[in-house]
Image (cartoon, rainbow, N blue to C red; front, side, top):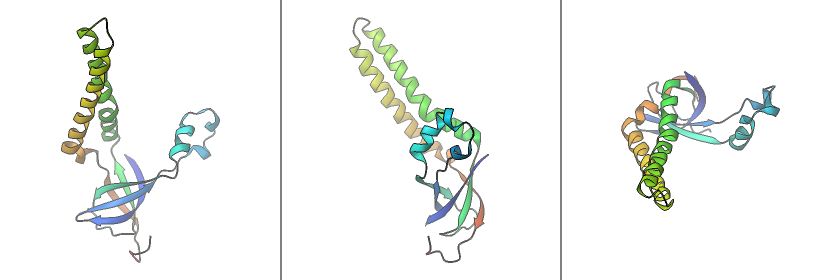
Length: 150
């Protein structure tokens, strides 16, 4: 299970908006000079993200909470978001090449349409199965004394 701490910033019915800050372990890593992850972490470090989770523990605005998501759910979501549009793009390019082997125009058009169709499929899957990819509220680390303080 992958966990992350965040602060509750809003309540929406039976759900919470939790804000997390992406932090990187690159500054303490001994291999930071030779790792490509450092460049990526440098671009996103300190960026705030907000995620919607079910309020199963009765958390309030200002509480520091721990969120968790299964590694398998994260892997499935990553494959869905990244691989599916790419597969549709390749299938579209191959189909376009089969339609007109002497011209790249059809391959270009159908690869773009394939990728667009892949994104539509991903969006629909997320709408219907998004609950499986959503983090869960694991525990309340620190309760806020005054919910107006943030």
